[in-house]
Image (cartoon, rainbow, N blue to C red; front, side, top):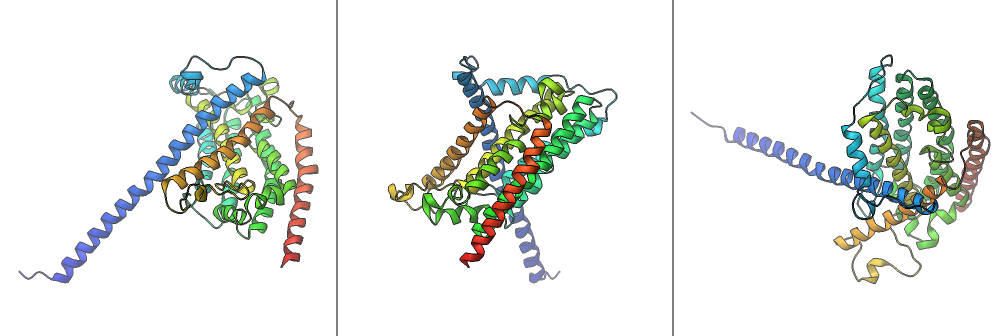
Length: 362
């Protein structure tokens, strides 16, 4: 029997390549799982912070029994929802009713793919990063509309319709603000936008170069997250709980999770687009130079980048939480008027100004 050596080499190389593919597949899972774990911890911290800040604003004691300073209260609530009975409406569309919460959560989770938490610390550095976020986030209201329609409840359906109308109204000004930032940075990649701001330090932040766009983006982000004063889709006094009325157990928990995930992703995008991302950018001070390390290499630099990004993001979260207990809820007509008659023309004017300034500077 004659064995052809070329065939043996081909088989060995094929098996080696297959093995390497499996190894690469496993390696890719690690950062994804790390990101999911980080997001989960971030959401738990947001829930705890909201309760503590709300308690301080209302001059009362917040959560204090579940763990030290009540930090485990969110875990206790999530566990309770996990074990509650999952009720289904008898005359509703069960498929739409069941799929709606999943669509809302998955579409928001996918937005985290393009967020840079530090230098070279991003799952997918795409050339259309920010617009991918806008495209994916516009899927979430479809899930809410499906949930409202599938519940066979007039309050749920009204809440779903309001969510869709609100999302359409405020996505356009949001997109125009993002387009202005892309023009300033000559890129739609989130990493390139942060690096474009880092060239000029603290005064290079887009917050100073785009103050009107920042305010419009802030208001539109609050409306997209359905936070007060824009929480019309789930207005308790009018619609019981909006599209969540018929939900219980884990599905209700998914809606609860989706709202906080959306809030966190919006605050992270505010940080990336307007506040310089992972760069500290204090004038004449650089953290890596201060400690005598290179920002490209070293775990310390990476950790500092993540911490700076999260501190900036949680500063925006603090603003949105305090806004919840400061401003009264708007009427539906006022909400739509603000979006279409004020924010849309202002964001269009801001885009025209940005385009003109970029053309003049050529």
